[in-house]
Length: 407
Image (cartoon, one colour):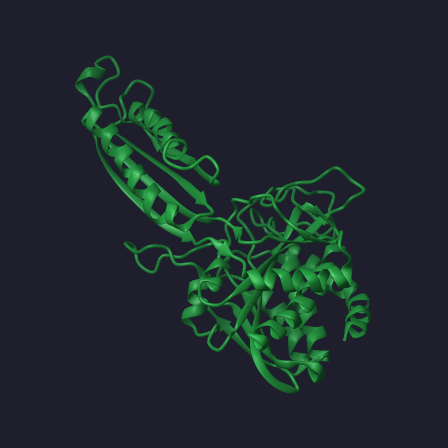
């Protein structure tokens, strides 16, 4: 099977790079990946697989039935771009869509899963079980179902659509510029942080700036609140536990000589401990706001929503897939990652329902020091990583089938 794998990857690589470049040139935002879905379907239909399109609007689900019965595992890739204006004029395949680009590598993820599906289809006579695959829309964008509801992630809608029914394990990956091309990283425990977002509105009373004592200054209140929120983290959480709080936007005021009566601020909280996100921080944040508003006679509203849970890798999957990749690729290429990442991923919703594994795919060219982070307007990557990703996803799928069957 591994001989089939290596020969197939070498033959497929140019085609997968071409697909990636086409998708990069024509990125689409979440729930609007219509052209992207058409490209995917055009690649998959000749394989003779059962396919379901329109899953959560633009997603695609299919399955490779092995020659012998066994468990089911799910492979997932995300498809959507980001609302960012690309700044890579040197690329002849730079985004042609104003203010939209693939700044997080989802074009590569899609190409990688297409390659893995092609190869696994050729291997179906040797597969014991079923390998489902999901091209998921809108990883970057949760959606509100009504004006007063909490935003719902696309992964949650995928689960509600029944895509995880009967699945024993899930596998995903993400481009990772901190690793070199050729490397695949695996982290024990929490692979991605859980995240929540908050919106705080401070309501005061506006007056002329020459008579501030007659009003309630919401801007001064928010300025002090920002420092209080940092204290919430540094003085309530063990310093050894990774947690961060970031204020991302502040909006308020009318003009330079008027005390502002209303300010709205938004931000995010990230942690690798779900209890901190769900219980400790929301209560402490509200207590800080209450104290501040009592001190200045202001009123407030607080909206605190969970975005994604902590993404936990299954311990047995980590060890089994690491061993398989180390044998196939080499010990230096299969990397156990110890550094902490505070980014979040809606793949975490899947791992709340079934055991899963999320891989980091190295994508930085070792011959250059010019590297741009994920979600940068200048993000690009070493396309040789696509072949490595196909190898990792294919071997990972076969390994997870063995693990679920043995459990």
